[in-house]
Structure formats: C-alpha cells, structure tokens
Image (cartoon, rainbow, N blue to C red; front, side, top):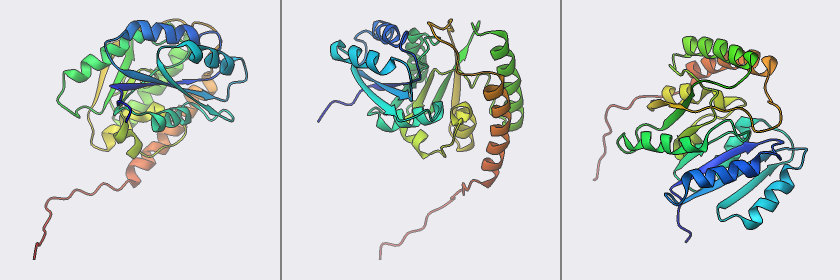
Length: 248
C-alpha cells in the first residue's frame, strides 16, 4: 500500500501555461524534503498550451503529481472539489495557479495547525497583506467581504485568498455549489467547526490575465451570499443530548 502523504496540494488552473511550471518548481523548493506530499492539478477547461506544459513537466518531475482535466470550464469551486476528492491526504492545501500565492506560506499554514490540538481547527485561511491586485479587484473584494461578513457572521476578512489548509473529510461533508470556495469559513462555522486566519504574502501575477472582474466577483458574490443565508436557515443540525441503549 502506498504511503499516505502528509498533505495534498490542490491547485485549480485555467490557461496558466506560462506560469504553472515555475509555480511547481517554486513549490518544490519551498517545501524541500521536510514533508512527504503530493500535488493535485485540476485543469478546468484550458484552451491554451497548459495541458502540454503539464505533461512535459510530469515526465521529469521528482514530485508526485496527478492531473485531472475537466472537459470544459466549470469554475474554481468545481475544480477544488475534483482535486480534493482525488487527494489521498487527510489535510489539503489549496493554492491558486497564477503565482500570486507564495508557496513559502504553505509552512505558515502548517505551523498554525501545529499550534492547536488534533482536529481543531478544521479550516485555516490565508489573509493576504499588501495585496498586489488592481483597484477594481481590491475594491469589489472589500465590499463583498464586508457585506458577506455582516450578513453571515463568519468574521472572515479575506475569503478570496486561495491559500487554505482544509480538513478533507470535513470538507466533503459540506454542501457543494458553484462559488462555494468563497464561503468556506461560513460553511465550516455553520457546521460547528473552528476556523482560523493567518497573514500570508501576496504577489503580482506571473503571467496571463485575471479570470475575475466586477461582474463575476462582486455581483455574483452578493447573490451567493443571499443563497447561503437561505441554506443556513434550511440546514438540519439537531443536537443529541443523550443516547440510550439496551444490551439485553
């Protein structure tokens, strides 16, 4: 039986042919031999040379890499779900494929987990400091985060950060829907799990263009927030005080 990795790194990608090789190299350098890990790439319907670049990289990489490919673009939440389902480790590191997340912060998340007792918390989220995004992304993100946090009470300052440490089994028990990756703190907290936030680095994109703008970041986020409020009110979470049994 193959050895279970200490953690799995899940990276959703879409048309990142120019940056994915460098990001994988950088990730391997940041972790070195401190851990036994695997990388799960999920190509979410790329139309550029991403597929060929990944295939070439995998032929000579010392890192254990698995790549899943969607037949079309399903979105980041679907890509994360595919990757986490296919991962072998109990804990999942998620990271964006555009290079804006710093792989060195993987150890930041792992060190935060070590500060807590086993299985607590179940979600550790990165909080980007000194963001390198343009004004539209920063402004729309600030509005959406403030609005969402006020209505959902998740106390999450930056749900858009791709760097997260997630307990796999807990994640798979949650309801899954489009754009759910932005609501993970609220979903985990609503189901009774502890969520932590740690400061992480943020960088300019290595190449390519952002897949998000004012239309699919701000307005979609406001609509999804309303949907999650409905979901929270409709979810069934009975509390059992005592269990009686008879051995006769």
